[in-house]
Image (tube, rainbow, N blue to C red; front, side):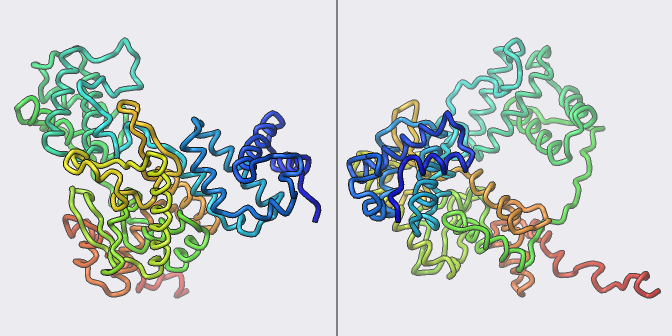
Length: 463
């Protein structure tokens, strides 16, 4: 076997459509990796050429990427470029067998950082008084001082009532839009008439969906009742009828085909969603202590409605979860050794348990591949992976599996519930596993039990 060289690597870059002006950066990325591994980056890719290259192991790549993240200020696109360069180098040039199965997707897709307004951290990152959340509005249409004060009061009351951050974000956004719509009306003069006008505008002019109309109405009811201290009466306005939609459900064969297209960390995430019925953010926010191997269960904490519940731990993924915990432990110990190792804790836990943020049990089970820096305090934390990365992987897997149905991450939850009912489990059990407050919500999955029209023979078949 001939010793690989930079000319060979640049040929591979060209074949993979890497622009000429970026190829030198790809080479520099590999040089930095070789210096990390061998202490040199000669034209022969190491003093012993191919012998040294063959000594590169998967843990070398992981350790290098962790080292880069800790010691180098690198933009997200630069980090992804580094990973792509390593992938092309180790697979296409060095032909290392382990590199083909290495979880490149985790390192690349899990590098996305959480925005300050992300639901996980927004409560701590959003301070009062707030500016109008209407980023689409021009500065000349900013809310007046009195309208802004009303919006601030809304936030205070929502937080005092411990409402979910997404509820806060939604209510704040729609109330701000309502106040902007009636910018010329004094706060003290806002009445039922103004609420009705805005709702009619959304329904007739903006043609928003029935669900959106209901959310806006709830926002305005909350505003009038809890901030303006009077009940809202919108007589004469009728919400659009809600469309009764049957959820998209995959058959067992379709689910098998979908999961076959997903490997590594994202294969585990998708498998857990289907195997437990967890919502997207529930599986993304799992922490190490939530996996109970002894009792074969997973604890879902602070779920919708701020409730905890238990779901079964699928035996198929038990060993993978044990390995994932071991990976988090190794990564966490390395972070601690470097002076990091802190994780975000919700509410007042960071004050109640000052040392918990650096304990293994509180670490996210599916951590991001890069650290995040709190711009306010300078604290360096490792958050969970961004949920959009899993959503994209599921969508791509559905395409690769040639599934015609519109598949999303929530389809896995729908399929979990439907398949349980098909297998004879009672609806109350399914309700509990899904975390539904009302069994009527779970009843939507009973469409598989009666299957209307299945037993009816079409008259065309009688001709």
